[in-house]
Length: 173
Image 1 (tube, one colour):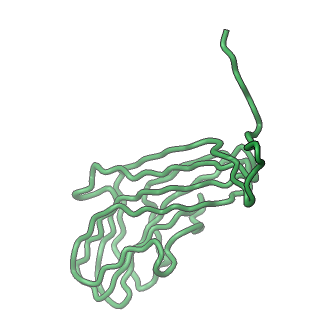
Image 2 (cartoon, rainbow, N blue to C red):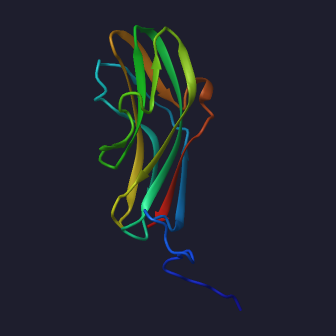
């Protein structure tokens, strides 16, 4: 005969810490290595492309927070540039930016002709205030600040077999 213990919430004996944070309720993990890219087309960062990395979580409680952890692999190939930058953003299903891309935050900046490959990490704590399924997607873009041309690729070139990952953790309030 198997035993089963079910609870709605686990609270430490000293109570929940000020500011919340009861514990991890569930974890969702996604990975992807499907290629996507964008050649720069403007001096603004308004045009985004989907990197094919996404994950969906259905929070158990509307008061929970979701810790989003992203490791996005990329290649940034600069043909010519006076100053160029690339950004990654965490967005919802409709493409609304939730985190990333603001000046000096979550960006890769190059000032010379070069190629650069790496993994870009973003950690973001979000309050979706829902118990409905919520999808997080990673978008990227690259643009020139003064002049130049470049291409931002994910999952291509020398990093073709490198997987980008997203981990979603529901944290109880």
